[in-house]
Image 1 (cartoon, rainbow, N blue to C red):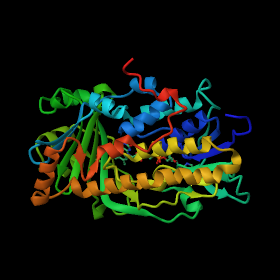
Image 2: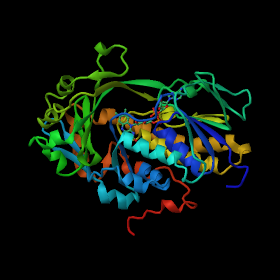
Image 3: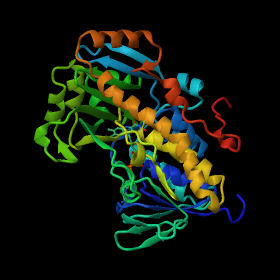
Image 4: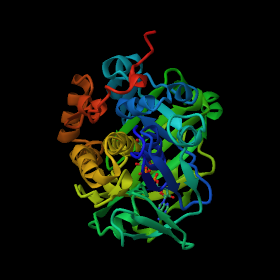
Length: 423
Ligand SMILES: Cc1cc2nc3c(=O)[nH]c(=O)nc-3n(C[C@H](O)[C@H](O)[C@H](O)COP(=O)(O)OP(=O)(O)OC[C@H]3O[C@@H](n4cnc5c(N)ncnc54)[C@H](O)[C@@H]3O)c2cc1C
């Protein structure tokens, strides 16, 4: 990049979205500072999946080798029927997606994925200026007295002046409020149970050993609720996400600790394998209400823009929230990396134009699965199961081709994108 083009970007929020953006912007030669409210950067103890649309971006950022060391590769995605555990749909993953989409479908421990991206951000030997990270820095105000030098102000009064501010501060985004974006937050009526179960416990029980015969990404469909699980860290843990209706008795609670009994009870009348798995959950069961945002294409105001859950929080029913944030990051870096500091506002607008429709479609597709996964037994459920049994890789009325191909990127300048597993 020509001298003088390298300007300053403040990224508010050091989650998976903010850090991927910081890394992508660094690669374009921009000087990035991440402001994170937490005292320490990190992610929760849970799993995460990246479909090819996101894996492709992480590869382009040069992370293939590091990701290969932390990923677990599922061979298929299976959908099971609640009552008897029978398989109603199967989508091949593994080599099939590698070849079809030129990028893998992988599972990780969230902390491993987050650490990998963080290390690449701060690596002194990486391409572009190393990202500066400020923890314990909660942004409470954005001062735009000078619109071309927006300034993030933290709780302790420190002012971080830059040329661009990216609000990657999650579903309850403060930056979003500060730029006057519409209040689009919606409570879904659902809650999630999240926990990790030790692989050893599951392998030693004949009722649950099948989980390790062949690694799969599993979704159980049942009336009014569903259940997701997959293996991470090469079999060390089974990641569990149970999605069930929120109960009025939980009141105004945000996140709270669940019990093994609560988890088992939520699926007690399901195929024996479901409660057999869940009964092995010990401690660290987290329950939280699921919020999402209405589609809204306004992600930018002058030289401040939003990214990730801050602008398109979605239900986790396509496993795409962080993946869409990674797509945002890649497009944002292409647009900002192509302009000088005089043309930032138009670059941000192009970023939003390229991303908002697509992300909105994923929000909708995720929302539709709240119904599609959970029909009561009857004609709609039967029609769905027949359709899934027939289709090779369809889900809801959204094809994975569209989702997993991702937003088109300009790959011309980036040799690292070349997929090398053939060599
Ligand atoms: C149960 C469940 C399963 C999921 N599974 C998947 C999956 O398999 N694949 C996938 O792609 N997605 C998945 N998601 C979605 C994914 O977790 C989120 O979409 C993603 O983490 C959002 O990243 P983000 O960086 O936008 O926001 P966040 O991860 O929320 O990060 C925001 C960061 O900003 C910080 N912050 C907030 N306010 C401020 C402030 N004022 N000042 C400074 N810092 C601030 C926060 O501390 C946080 O670190 C799942 C979600 C759930 C709930």
